[in-house]
Amino acid sequence: MEFSKDKKTIFSGVQPSGNLTIGNYLGAIKNWQDLQETHNCLYCVVDMHAITVRQDPAELRRRTLGTLAIYIASGIDPEKSIMFVQSHVPAHAELAWVLNCYTMFGELSRMTQFKDKSAKNAQNINAGLFTYPTLMAADILLYGTDLVPVGVDQKQHVELARDIAERFNQIYGDTFVVPEPYIPQTGRKIFSLADPGKKMSKSDENINSFIALLDSRDTIIRKFKRAVTDSDTCVRYAEGKDGINNLMTIYSCFTGKTMDEIEREFDGKGYAEFKLAVGEACADGLEPLQKRYNCLVSDRSYLEGILSNNADHAAYLARKMLSKVYRKVGFLAKNK
Ligand code: ATP
Ligand code: LTN
Image 1 (tube, helix red, strand yellow):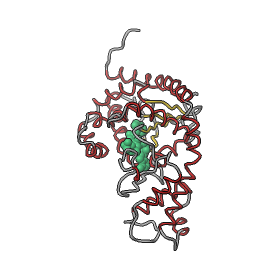
Image 2: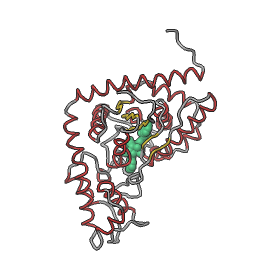
Image 3: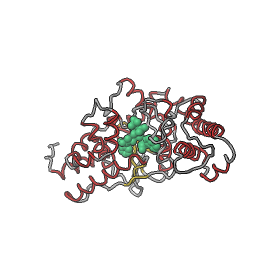
Image 4: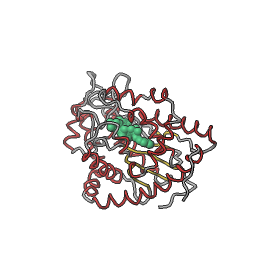
């Protein structure tokens, strides 16, 4: 596939750190598909980010391929977008090192994801967890990315990537494109079903807190039935009703209905009926994706073929940017 000079560039990624959830889907992946028609798109499985938290090696390999299968099953077309695995393109780690030297300790200390994850993994607050955002900045800046489609939890990281790009450009002249986050209106933050004050997260140890994209219809309906709500009985989008607001957001994402329409639809009906409707809409919405996923995941050689071709393409683009950066910072070029 040829990237056009007239189109803007998109980069995004998901960590293969668990079973992908409807949070990952509604906040990020679902929006990637439409962008392929109008932009040059790179979608990465960011396995190097995933090891900032301990992973089982065999599981990590399995999930890396599974995440690619989810991308394709969600409508990302290998003929239109570059899909690849982060560790297959060494320039990501190489640029991350350089960017580490242009990122302040204080900036990284302010990252809320670092604070949350270090509280959760108190026995393993490793340096990778701390410098995670500079690797993410490298992912983005290597490809001249204009827009980064992510959920709202990643906004702070994209803003840091902007700051690093601007700082570098100021010192060395125009080098990096300064990227912008691209965050959906609805679905920007899906909350945990068990604790609607918290983000839904694929690495939550409570499996009832998230809907995995590959959960069966029965499981989906059961999890929504158990979702924490409030003692009111009225389906209404309002302050203080975090659980119901979250379920209404999910329902809206899968049906396209507005909050007003949903309130009218469930006027006079109880929470049980509403939760069942949310479960059914979600299961219906995921069914085509699950069918495509099941076909794809059994075709390992097809998936591996995509990764190998695309890694070469991404590596070619990345190497050009990395060489420019190495030259600017003053690394001596090796004689060919
Ligand atoms: P982990 O729990 O392993 O940290 P995660 O579920 O938070 O993972 P990531 O791999 O960090 O998922 O995120 C991938 C993409 O999904 C990012 O763009 C992120 O903003 C988006 N995303 C993750 N969780 C949600 C959510 N609950 N609501 C909306 N978007 C989300
Ligand atoms: N940090 C992101 C995953 C990620 C990413 C990226 C997203 C790594 N590199 C580059 C967009 C662009 C997360 O969702 N936790």
